[in-house]
Length: 108
Image (cartoon, rainbow, N blue to C red; front, side):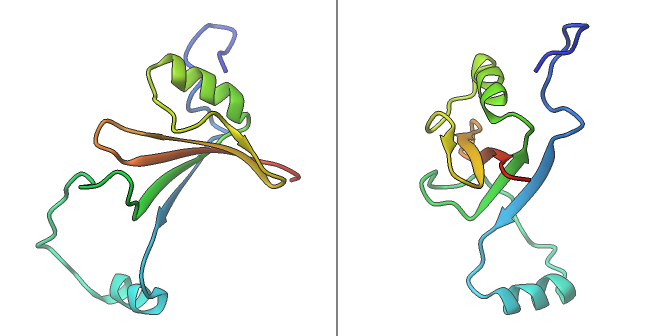
């Protein structure tokens, strides 16, 4: 994940970013996001890191390489990369407890 000049290899132009937001009722949430302005919202870190309502997913070309690079930079992963038929993925949190995933699709 390092180019010939030795510079950082994450993120690369191939990395895709997905933001996953968990909602109770998809239709109600869709209408809300289409029509409601809510200027009184306060941003805060997650109060409980084991309860997730949002996640950032980085689609990477090589999950294991991204895992090793991010781990060497200090990322603390919940598990090493896990293989499924459709993807290889691994999860880590930022210092505030926000959940991140690196995901390598398989079988494209």
